[in-house]
Length: 349
Image: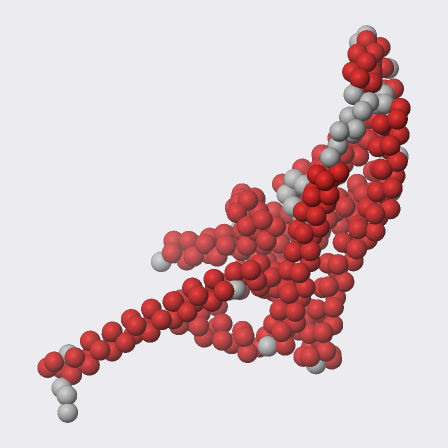
């Protein structure tokens, strides 16, 4: 019988086998990531949606069982995500005809300077005459438009939209199976995390989950508040379809500094209708609402759930969006929450 103490061969073989097993496992992991690269966004979104709605699934599971709860919550997520998109597509389709008519009328009659410019004191009349002379000279601005370019642009947008919808459908399918196999999956994650990180694994996982849920709560709160407040402002200022514009503002509020695109566009439209006072008021009110929401309300909600300082929440949101796109809204705060937790634990030891 081989003496392991005198030769050490079995110990060396055991270490070599462990290294070989680790190398094979790492190689398989890299190969799997490469193979599933196209589906990683769907998997990431599914993870975010499952974490955010897990308490709702647990409550539903107590009443109707695991399978029906998985079906119900997945359908609820699908409705919450798809319904605004469908409504927006329908409304935009309705407006396309009006936009086309405007383009045709502009080509036929030429562009005219809005009346509010002519009403400006001192320079209004001169400025209006100068602009009218140049705008009339460009009355055929659309004559040279290449129909093929518009077609290619439409195909590009359609392709991107189809890709996003496909990602969403895969994410919903993955969410359903995550709910169905959630208990077993959580146990496995707990075991693997404990083997890799030890005792802090579960605590760090809880911090990341709280950051994701806090981000979702912040997005919903900010989106609802901006939709209501600016929807009322649109109606008061005379913007057409105020409910639609309010909903669009609420949806875009999920992206930092994106909601101003809507009320700035609405303000510019009011300017063209010679409603300068309403345009300035809408721009000022919208800027105030967006500033408070992006710099105070959302970071406060997310930071309150994870005990993160304000500045780190803000940096997590902005850095996450810059690095990972829309998904970074959830990844950024969660990543910084985990790192800050590790820092605090190291600082106490």
